[in-house]
Image (cartoon, rainbow, N blue to C red; front, side):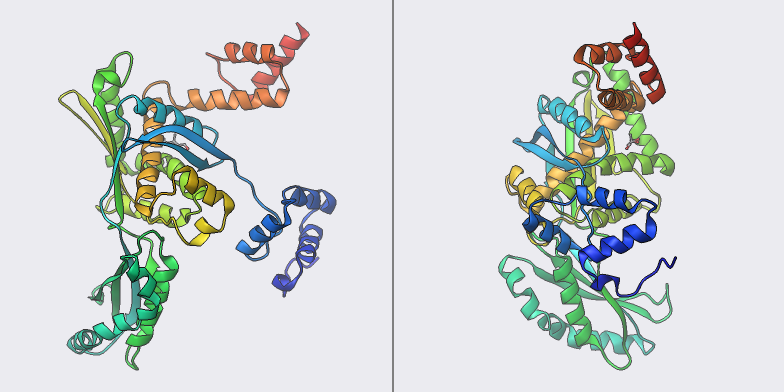
Length: 424
Ligand code: MEV
């Protein structure tokens, strides 16, 4: 049977579903039922979701959780998180509570500049190109006037346009490197529209525009978040040794890329969850963060740790191009709700909150890794998930939790213990 098709996007939703289930599934009825189980009975909401992308045939739900008790710059927050990994929200909540009694998190936005580039080829004289750029620069900015008008009233717009000679890296390759301030919007559409208007203005017979696009590498749109406290307040026992081990774990991630990637993945567990909950673009955030981790030429930790004069300090510095207006933030009802839960923050405040979520997650991971090991917490969650599937009573649940306190958890071991207990 043919498994390719033309004109699929023109099909009605029902036709699309029929074709998919009949073409790719042994049991089309079951496939159809699974898809329809996730439709929203509220047609207005379903239509909204249908229109986010092309060819929508169902909705893919992820859990929406909340990590309360975050204190950031002396303000209290409950942080919404969308994530499927079982330990992320629990870890964020524990760490939020922990630091709330130790002065909370401090966060500051260091910079907010975004970048876009017009990439072009030119095989004439460099001096001639420079002259042409200097004489047209003001008209390049003027060409974007109608696009930047609103943004300028909000204090944003184009900051500068620079001609960059990249011919030492690629023959005939030049760029217009454009910097932007986009205030509370992430600014992707704004930046791309400006770049296209600039490219149109810059076009000449001997200038071959290749493409115009924003960059998701934003090393000048950076936020720093930090926690600190006396070492003895960090752990109940052997605080100095454990604080040292914690710092060593960060130091290792700073010199060993294999570890750094996993270390930063843990940070992104927290970051992406809030980015998603607030309707922001997690792919943009991911690419920017990992590129930043590589800014020195070798891939390093996004967090750092210092122990000086008995004070433990742990911080993150990360680029976060976020918006609190525009895009999905205003359209998706849950993204709107998340922003309201956070007190309708500005983009800068949201940068601070999200950097904190990343720092908290990394703190939780390193604390677990350097003490009990990561599986202890994971297995506890795994154990409660298995117990839930067993339909165990409260008494049976307590028995199983106690029984597995110091034992290896596996699905078969839990089921076997449960059955044995039932027989007794
Ligand atoms: C798992 O999702 C994240 C961790 O691997 C992060 C880390 O190792 O630091 C626990």
